[in-house]
Amino acid sequence: MSREVEERNRRLLRARNAMDRSYAEPLDVRAVAAVAHISPAHFSRSFRAVFGESPHRYLQRRRVERSMFLLRETERPVSEICLDVGFSSPGTFSRTFLAIVGATPGAYRKQHQPATTPHCVQRAVLRPVGAPAGIA
Image 1 (tube, rainbow, N blue to C red):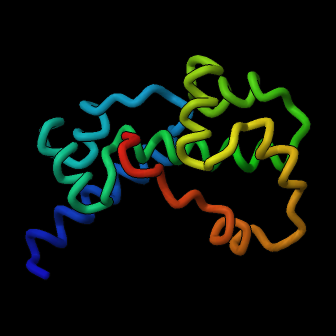
Image 2 (spheres, one colour; image 1 turned 90 degrees about the horizontal axis):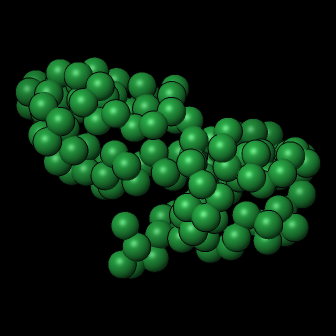
Image 3 (cartoon, one colour; image 1 turned 180 degrees about the vertical axis):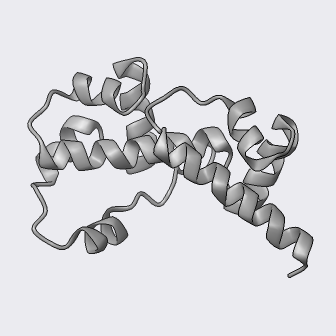
């Protein structure tokens, strides 16, 4: 791997880490691209090339991952969890959750009880694999 490619990947990882830290906030592509020191358009293209999904889709998946944990481990209402993880409406949350996980938030909660395995194993086993073809 060339030094240039390695440096680009490092900058994109820093930007992705910034997205991970502020997953519940609205996505500001300009601000995240600034972390990577590249233009917003180039950032989106580069992010997709390196990570296999758009920045928006990555952020949606991170929000759904966090909501999966909250649905399993808490008794909080789905609508409250929806807002806490950064979705602006329960409808969008449910539709996105269904597309990524394959079940509605309520059905997921009924099927998955609080986990007793180590957190690292939970993340590996319960990580959503992605949306079916045609869903972006």
